[in-house]
Amino acid sequence: QVQLVESGGGLVQAGGSLRLSCAASGRTFTDYTMAWYRQAPGKERDFVAVISWNSASTSYADSVKGRFTISRDNAKNRVYLQMNSLKPEDTAVYYCKGRRADGSTIDYWGQGTQVTVSS
Image (cartoon, rainbow, N blue to C red; front, side, top):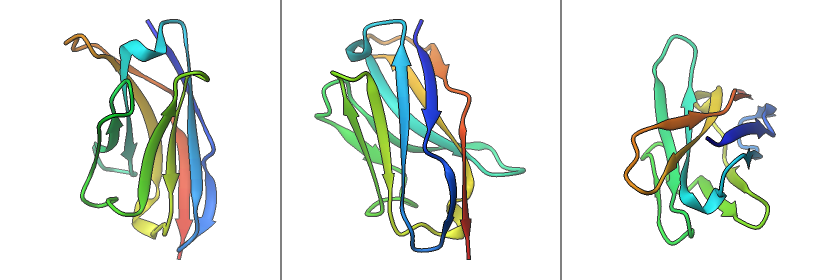
């Protein structure tokens, strides 16, 4: 299985930017489709963005389109989430998720990193 560790969260003012990073270890990183999810207090965990193993395909939640960018560096076993024009409603714990790209339904999650956007 793959182990995932997120970093880069913090407190930022509305309109600011943050870059989240997720470091993967334990298995061949290019075997995995990678995604970011987020969970606000009292709410369900929601999809944010996903990227294919070779970065050829990305997809975003409507709420973050045009503001967030997902990317990966397979040489460094990392996936990133660049977040611009942050809004208070982006406040949540952000989680990195990996799933093998061979049709597996097993998801691997990191521990999460807190992002707080003040108004």
